[in-house]
Figure 1 (spheres, rainbow, N blue to C red):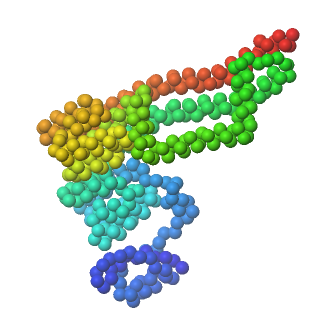
Figure 2: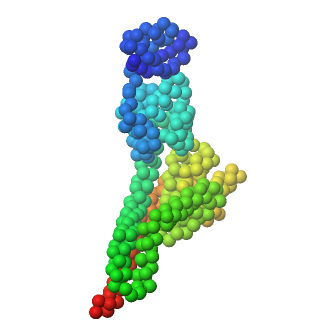
Figure 3: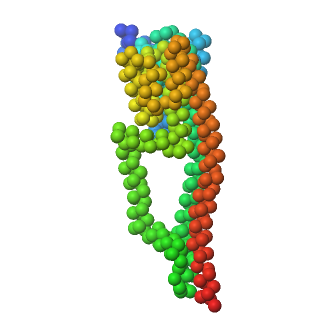
Length: 406
């Protein structure tokens, strides 16, 4: 029996959405009319196949690009004077991401019942985080929802671009590292045993380095030892992740990450750029400064930076200045705090924050290029060293083999 999705209004005038099973759409209309409901819209529910059900699950998430595209298109509809309900309906119909589509349908249903757009989005944190909801709420209060949506789209696009730059920098060393480890393990497990058999047939003692490689090969080829080593590796990773979930662990690891050569500087500049871009967008949209700092604190991405923002928030709450509070924590670069101080003195802090964000995003791009230029030859040396160690281990006994053959 087909299932139909119905939007109807009861005798008291309250609209709601429900599902009804009926042999035909005509029978569904008749049943609802007998219940005293005024039908606003009725359509057959779409049947989901196995693949789409998986997409609605953990296999597909809502990316930053999905939200940026929605914000840009929805802004154009709002600016054109399209009603929220109709605009949300259009966006949900053309949305390609199943999770975002479901969230938009729920938001649309809530808006039809008289709920504000920001409150409706607040019920879907997997699609619309606290930052997104706060800016939408400010846009509704100020009557500039289309402008806020445009700013959100720009902010999300900048975040996506920054993430892509960092991912592109990490992709090369990760791929080369995986290839190097795979080649090394393959040669140790499959190649060393062949030469080990030859050495045993000819007799004689192996050089120390070769014997170490042979012992490592035997260790990896022994099931119980291999399983034990794998359990130790995965157990260490799990323990580290659990430790990172604690506040003390997060602070310790994030503090160490800021001191790592090459990566520490990149992490700091990324955090500064994200802070300035997000805080500037919130301030420009009319979000109160204390609430904006609370949102930025939760999206900083580094606990040490979050602590500095939290201390600055307390300082401002007591009547202090943002630039002086950030300078006191010694997490943000002096150049950033001085530019923010100029913005506070001139009364154009949102513009200055955007300039700081632009500057440090350019710095991140340069840092990524510098890191990539350093990592490429370093990874080649590592790969050559791992393969070379196997070759050295095999060639060292050759001199003894020649003597034994004679």
